[in-house]
Image (cartoon, rainbow, N blue to C red; front, side, top):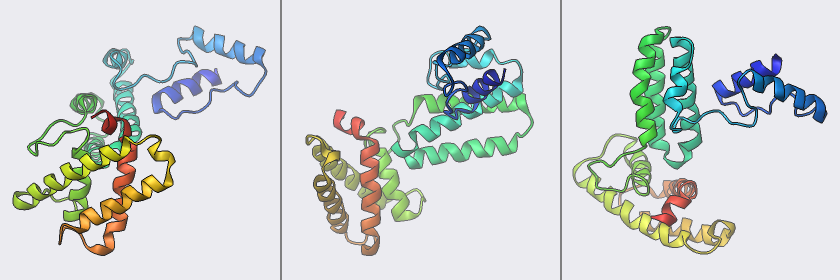
Length: 235
């Protein structure tokens, strides 16, 4: 029963804990697995993902509004943690919206379920195209990171927004070329060359960022490129 409770908690809170019984003998482990499977949980199947086609049906099967709200909340939290490095600004905004909803509707389980539905749908769709004309997957995360560094997170407009868009397009084009080099991330030299190029590139746009911050910003942009490697080389 302890194994059953632990697996239900692991699946709800997406903790990734090793199921109870893995450290004991094969015979005892098999008995535990057979028992929890008979109760409806297969230890070999990971918790259902928010993007799984059966997620909504899974939520509907929960016994109470409170259980539904909890399942939705923790699936969304896990989705944010899993993808945060790919688009920190976008997922930070999603995380802040989630915190606000949970605080405002604390204990109001039916209302909380309804309020979380559009956030779940937004997370499933991911970042969408906006008025910048940038590609939401390969360019917008870099634009948002630059905007954060330049304006402190205040949305840029007018000439500054246009400049940030141009800088983003040119920078991402160069990053994509570099990442297509064989085994790029295994080469410290290749990574350092890219980092130095970003420093010089940003420095060439006078007044965009203070010189003493360029190294740190370049480091963040390189890490963002690493988190989005497959999207960038595919794009």
